Structure formats: structure tokens, C-alpha cells
Image (tube, one colour):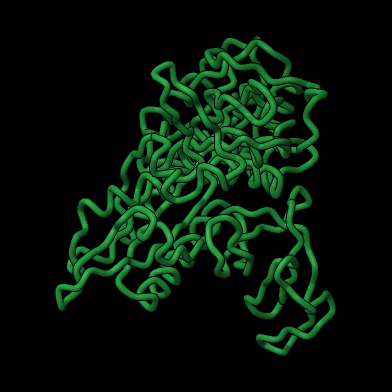
Length: 419
């Protein structure tokens, strides 16, 4: 895409009503537009980034046998009343219709997915089953905060699994756990798996996936030598400086972290409330064990910004960035430079390399500042050296490393075809 065609513009100043780094940078760089507290529209760059995150999540969920569906966002009130959620879930948006019926906006999908699964899994032979979707969620938060990390409308991948035994659920949990860790790694993050209370979803212990960041809302205790980690809310007498009870090789550290995913053992609560039974091998009716696996896709986008941004702006990992390359013509008034940059842009796009081409009639310094703010992984600079000797500057956004490469070398590195 040519940057002159991009309808969004960068801003020099952060909006005064945003305190979170992720919201400040995403608005300044033109990724999102704030509609109201806790509600954002995703613009061209933001939609591309969010799609890339969703594609990573989708690939991993498909790889472990998840089947993607698209569930309704507008829910009838009846199943919520059957489970008790209508009165117990305080963040549930409720809608009164002109037809005198009551509806809810989905803040989770247990009340919808359980009846769906019950219709298509009447036998033990149909289990285990895992169903997921990637879509919008709505929660009536009293105080939306932290930019896109805690909102009233947000993107989420939620998966639900059904099993004949507790052991099978725990087997599948380990599979999901590894898939989640792969997702976070691909997004440039290191996540820790913590124990936490089940909250309104379950009376059992749940598991949260946490990324250390100053913007986090939770405090965790973790071991630097092994994978032991616990939310302080369920840590009991355990405290910072204690010897790790799992490995015994290190003392526990305390840190502020942001939740980027969770797993709930729902037991038979929802199948019982909504009448989902299956026939076992002896023909007896049984309630399946149910699991819930949440991962906030828009929240993950915000956490990436919080964790990886620097003083210049956003730093996207290549896997989620809206473009791989930011091609900057530093000599916009030079006809020869324009022709050179145009040719290079056409070569990249013809080879399906995602490139944002800053072809604007603007000063080089302004273009470089915008490039740093937008955070695309690599910047290619067309300057005097390119015209004199086919030498282009390649800047790594994350490390600041600068290389000098020819046009042919760049095409070889970033495309599957050479000149």
C-alpha cells in the first residue's frame, strides 16, 4: 500500500484522555479510533494487525483439533436464566426488545455452545469435542481502562471442549496449554501459566496465562528456574523471596503482569443446567465434562504494544505487523529517487511481499519519525546511496541495526524470487 493512499494520519501528541501506553500509541499511529471509553474501531493498520493475530490463533486451534464456528452475539435470555448467569453475571449487557422479550449481548458463549454441542454429540462416540470461535464480546464494565486491554467491546477467541472423563479434560488442557504458549511466542511474548481462582465460571482452580508488563492488573509470584507461577490472590502464605516449592532451586520473584488467556474447568455445571447428556458405552445417560479456553485477541494486541514498544513508538513482531517492510523515499522531490522507489515498490508487491510505501511529499525526518511510530519491522530507505550505487539502508525496528544492501539482495531476502 502507498502511504499517500492510507486515509489515516499520524499524530504528534497523545490524546489527553488516554493514560495507557497502548491506546496512546495505537491512536497516534492510526491503528484505532476511540468511540467511547472501552470501545475502539480498528482502522486499516489495526485491522490488518488484528487479523494477523487471529490467523496465528486460528492455525494453532485448528492444529489441536478445534473446529471453528461463528456463534450468535445476540443471545436469548432463557439459557442465561437456566444457568443462573442472568442474575449472577454483573457485566452482562441486557436488552429489552420492543417485542417485550429480553436478550443479552454475549460476554461468553457457554449458554449458546452447550445446546449446540448437545444436539450433535448424543453419544460417547462423538466425544471429545472442541469448538471455538473468534469474534466480538461485550461486557458492561463499570470502569473500562487500559486502552484496548480492558474494554466494553473486544475481540476474543473462546473455545469449549466436552469430555467423557476428567482425565480426558486434563489431557486436552495440556495440549491447549502448549498451543497457547506457541501463540504467545509467535507474537513475541513470553507467557507464564499461573493458578488462579475460577471466579464466576467455576469453583475450581483455573489457569491464567500472564505476560510481565507494567500495564498489568495482576501481581504474580514466579520462579526464574522453572515454570512455577501463581497469582498472589491464591498464593496463600507464599510470598516473594520464598524458595520455589516446585524445583527448590531458586527464590520466587514478584511481578506485575497482564492476563492474555485463561482456562476454566467447568465440570458438568453447564451441561446439567442446559440438559446436555450423552449415552455412555452401557447406554446410560451421562453429563460431559466441559472446559472453556479464552484468549483475548484485541487484548493481546494491546499487550504486545505495552511489552515491546520503545520511546519512539510501536515495535511489532514480524508475525503480527500490518506490513513486513516500510519503504521510505527520503528524497521525495528528486524525480530519479521517485522512479527508483516506485520500481522497488512494484517489485516487492509483484512478489506478494507486504510493504507500506511512504511516497508522501514530506521531509525525510518526518517520514522516519512516522516509521518508528508505526512500528513495521523493517525500514528500507531510498537515499543518495541508492541512486549512486544501488546501496539501500535496511533498518531493523526492534534492534536499530542498520545494514547496507543492494536491491537484488533485498529482494532475495524478503521475497521467494530473485530479480
